[in-house]
Length: 221
Image (cartoon, rainbow, N blue to C red):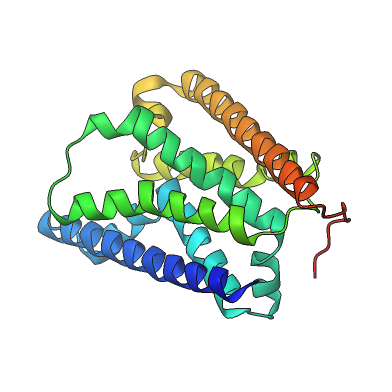
């Protein structure tokens, strides 16, 4: 990766970790203020798709910026993994700005944390994806494989909710909507993920062709 792109990636990684740290601090402060303790704040923090996806974003950016050559680093630097993460962070931004932002009114540092994770990091990661990620190995069949992550989160969120009755997003709230409506919402979300992933593959393959890069087989190295 060119040095100019590595610098951008390193800065984006740093901002990603700062945003995550701020949001964790705010989550813990909120639960402590309500007498529930720091572990409750961490439990809630790890229940959001936004947080988990931004963790993946920060890890992928860090692995790329440092050139990590360990097993996890090589995995995170793969173009298909980067594209799967791009799919998820785009959906994070879209759902937040289209459906969730108007449901509450953050103040102070919460505004900074929200904008960092829902706006700044999606923009920075997509800029990194466009400029620094080779895309000649992207394949249409990978689109379905990338749905494992959002599908796993769906199961994870419902399992957590079944334990303590708390659901991170209103469209997943079984206590209000019931399992059938939540399942329908989940299927609709899955179609959105597939559409975004397909668009990314189309854009990536177009970019590779435009740059004159021959198509190559995906590799795990």
